[in-house]
Each structure stands twice: as structure tokens, then as C-alpha cells.
Length: 139
Image 1 (cartoon, rainbow, N blue to C red):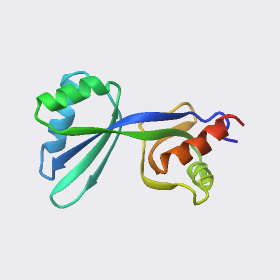
Image 2: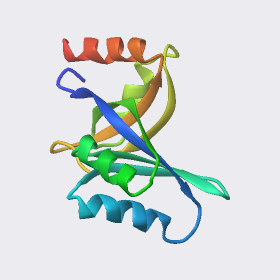
Image 3: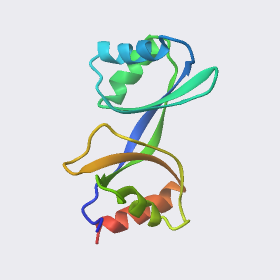
Image 4: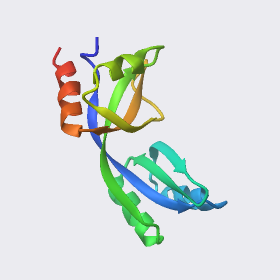
């Protein structure tokens, strides 16, 4: 079952970048220079720009570094959920939402507990999603 699943609200940093060579390197370089460690990253792109979504080990340090470098960044809450690292682990989790919760977007973190992976999800409505996920923890 999912009773031992870890569920956490995470602060996600989002950055809009031009779609040109070197922008992503500059972004992660700014963070690296301040000692910020990336925990998860995804990029959604168009012809002209991309949205980089990050989970980092220190939001305060990351935001200060980005703003000082002239990079606009916003913070939004997302849900981090551990899923078993096996075929069907994510499929089972998503069936629990049973049409009551929609996944706006999702990506995987770099690591999770042994035998598990962390999925980062923007869920709607978030309150209903959390209630479902927290009820699993009580099983």
C-alpha cells in the first residue's frame, strides 16, 4: 500500500528564460556560485522562451542570487510525493485521484529514498489532493 509514502509541500522556483544558447548555463552557474544544490529541474519550452522549474536546497539563497544576477524568479507551492520505483508505481498513485484531482504538470526529482522516486506535482485543487494523499499516510 501507500501508507509509508512521504508527501511534502515544496517551494518551487520558476524562471522565464530566453530560448537561446547559454541561458540555462548562466542560470545554473549563478546558483552553483552560491553553493545552491539542485534537487529537481524541468524545462518547458517554446520557440522564444522557456520556463525552468527548480527545487533547490536553499530557496532564500537561490532567490537572492537570481535577483542579484537580474534573473526574475517566482516561488509557488507544489507537492512532492514518493512513489515506488517499479512499473505501475505512478499509475497506482494517479488512480487514487479518481477524477477528483487534475495534474497540471509533473516531473521527477533527482533522487528519493531507496526503492522510491519523488514526483513533483502541481495539482488542482491542491486541498483535495493533499487530503487524499494524507489519508494514505494514515492507512
